[in-house]
Length: 424
Image (cartoon, rainbow, N blue to C red; front, side):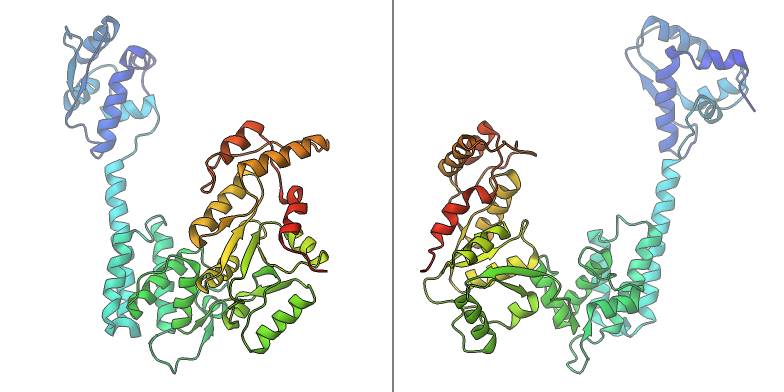
């Protein structure tokens, strides 16, 4: 049915707008039932007159309480000829049964966990004490809460399948399996257990429960947990650019790295190589850290002697692993990066995590470089993004904001190469 034009014109008048807004909120919250009441305050004369005509009784004050069942009955016996819910639908937009949606959502979520428990019951995991704690932990933490019920059920099903493939995780007789192979077996794609997937996070929570450890937060801990369960992560695709590392160990890997350093050759190291290397450098070695590969190239060309690690922009896991290893061995790091906000943010990260010292990264250094760039007529590149305070120098961010000029490491290349002590 449609509202008669005269009734629609009356109901749609602006003076009744607050009535319909309040009634809509109440109906959508209580299962689209004309129950309860709404209160309107601050009614002006036009609104009072319109509400009085709507309800068939005089509204004499600026406040009114409207019972929804009364309003529903009134609409049915007037020219509107329909109930409150239909009237609101005609006035638009369509009503949403939020209570029904919530109840439906709760039922769907309950079905997700019931299906997961059924999957466990039909698997070798059924007799494992940790599994019920794992499911309870996932439920409480909301680990799959942002997924649709259908996607959440699929992630949990695949997680049970993956953990079943690794069962029992403490058995040393279990043959190691590549993470990509396991992911392909469970999801059909080699990337199904990549670090950024919900499935990976859910499976790792299960492995942590099985092995009696805390769920891993950082990438090194995640890889260690995978290895403890007999899963071999990909440790060869990412590399860190290094120069001048001279480990003192007697192995062939350490000898090869020292030889490349003697020939002033840069070296790309994988996570796999880092795990195998004994990266203890000569006592007192200071390791310089730069952001741009051009610094490594210039250091090699100048036959510098100092140890150098390049983050190649935002430091990847393999970079952080190497810096972790070096600081754990007692070596001091000194960081230089771009004089822009991402460069300062990366510097803060390395200073906080590794206790690095700044290297040519003071406000005075920035101002001198900016002045020199201006004198040379180098076009100014403005800073972009939100400002970042430097942990090591409270004056640096204000100086950068004042001059509004981004300076990349190439502008300080002459300084950096001199600091790296070139040999003859």
